[in-house]
Image (cartoon, rainbow, N blue to C red):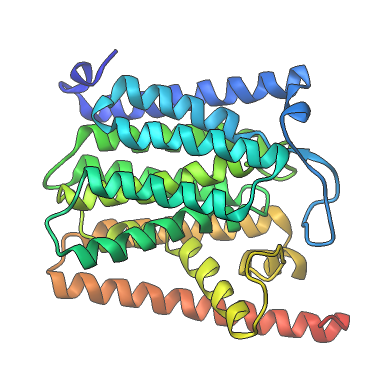
Length: 340
C-alpha cells in the first residue's frame, strides 16, 4: 500500500488510512495495558491540582506516535520532516515523563523542531511574518500539553482537529493527498487512544503524546497554508477551543503575576469538571463545540476573503461568550461552596 495506490480513489485511501491507524493504535495500547507494561513506562500520580484520584499510566503517546510516524513515512513520505520531528519530540518527552527535564531543555527542543520546519519549508512571505508564525507554532506545541488534563479532551481535540485537516486537504481547490493522509492517520490514531481515554480513563496522553500532537497540529497547518491548500486562519479556527482556553488562562495568570509554568486547575475545561459537569459531560460539550467550529470553518472557505475573516471573528465572539458563561457559573459555584 502506498500513496500511488490511493490516487484512483483518494477518499477511500484517506478513510482506510484512518481505520488502519485506529486499529493499530488501539491494539498497541491494549497490549500495554494487558501486559502491565503501561504502568512501568510512565504513571501519573494524583496531586492537589489533579482532576483524577488514582494513579493512571501516561502512555497514550506510545500508541499514537509510533503508529502515526510509521504510517506517515509509509503512506505520505513527502511529509517525512514533521514525522521525524514528531518522533524526536516524543522521545525527549518520554524522558521528561520518566525522569524530568529542565524547562529550558524541553523548550529549546520545541524551538529547534519548529525552526527546522520553517527553515526547510519557508513560505513566500517576509522574514518577520515567518518569525511570528514560528513563535505561534512553539506556543501551539506547549498549549496542547496544558490542555491534557481531563478524560477524553485532548484525544477528542486531536480526532476532530486532524479530522478537519483531512477533510479540508481532500476537498480543497488545491487538494493535497499526502497532507490529507497524514491528517487522517493522526485522527485515526487519536480515536484509538480515545477507546481507553474516555471517562473513566484507563490511560492518559502524557507529554510523549501531547507535545508531538501539538507540534503536528502546527506543522501540518503551516504546510497546508504554505501550499495554498487552505487559508492561514483555518488551522487556528479548527483548534480554536484549545487555543482560546490555554491562551486566555495563561494571560489571566500573567496579569496576576503567577508562575505560569506551575500546575493549576484554572482552565475552562477544568472548571467545568469541578463545577459538577464531570469529565464525560465536559468532553461531550467540547466535542460539540469542536464539531461546530470545523463545520463553520469548512463552510467559510467558500466565502470571499473579507467574509472569511468576518467568520473567524464571529467564531471568536461565540467562544468569548462561552467563556464568559463558564466564568459566571464558576463564580456562582464558588459562592455556593465557599471556594476562592
